[in-house]
Image 1 (spheres, helix red, strand yellow):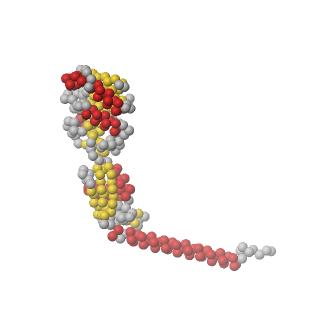
Image 2: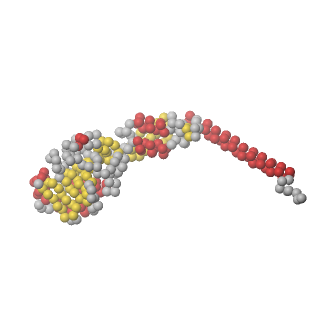
Image 3: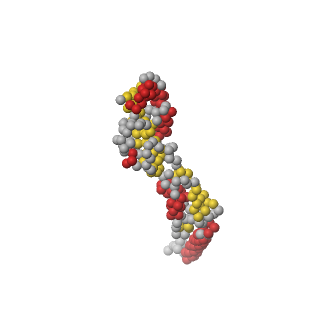
Length: 284
């Protein structure tokens, strides 16, 4: 019978010794890791490294106390039940920014910084209200139906961000068409629509509202003293806006449209710019 070398007492003893060394190293590693973890936990709770005050700056309309409440909610509690979320190195910057952006649509940008190791300063830039969006469809009577509309503010990029109070008259240029709060109105075409609106203003046509219709049609309504049937300009949203504006400007300086607008503007029904270089119009 051959001797079983692999199971010899000497080899078994050597294996046990090596196993004890490995276990000892693992144990020492875990102890060291625990000491480091507890040391970091202790240091992280140091008063000198934790936010004790929240300061909101740059806000003009948004309530600072509402912002503070939202931020306090995010920095309350601990990571892994040990590390405080108020720690200046660990506080949830991205979570705070995301939640504030969702809660306050008016916010354009948010900057977070820690001052004097104690104060979390939240610097806000708010969106500027330049226009209003008043729903998908323009009311049958723009004058009588205005009071029932719920409108929202838009900024210079077409972002819809906050409910607007009721304004009588033509304080803000109004947009109508598919959109929703927290989205962009006609994002791909908004700058061109504003360009065309401004071009109409330079032509003394006084645009007051714009509606995006089906089949890629756009109507811009003009100011009128009448209580209904406001005159409008109609064109296609996929047009070359600069070319359309040039064609309209030429037509406005050409008879008989030049005299008709001057003498009987109040009876204008529409100006149609959907057919290339041709400009169609109708007076009552």
